[in-house]
Length: 170
Ligand code: RBF
Image (cartoon, rainbow, N blue to C red; front, side, top):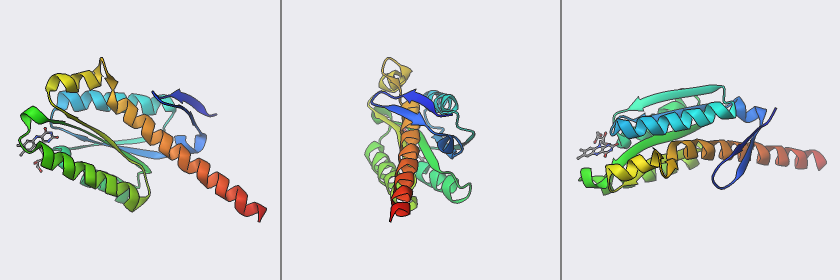
């Protein structure tokens, strides 16, 4: 039976096909107090949606997230990956280099594999701002990233089903 979830922007109906998908979460150890909370938010949302197979893998830092995501897709055949990290500008002299590299590489993986690789990386000025977004006053961005992964998997199923129906008609 489909499960109904409400993200901040949209309502999502999770079909049984999507529940059977394998979802990977790759999470950075840097700023682990923050990334751990984001991970909790993401896994709780996936479990609430009824996702049966979740693989969680840790990498050293945000810079390693794209390769971790690629391993999960190539070697573990994940259908979608949620990449979780936290870059704090004030504490990271290489902030711009790392965040640009991570953003660009994660973005490319989506199109390279035609699979959702969701950006769950906080890029903030202070540790306080990170806490607000990791289960604090501004919600949990890990949970939001999980809902985005589910929404994209659901979209794929819908488009596949629609294009299948059209082919039968012609
Ligand atoms: N990784 C993070 O996930 N968040 C950070 O805030 C962060 N800051 C870093 C600051 C410096 C100066 C360096 C050298 C690395 C930092 N890293 C950070 C680790 C980085 O993502 C990566 O794991 C290492 O550079 C090894 O490739």
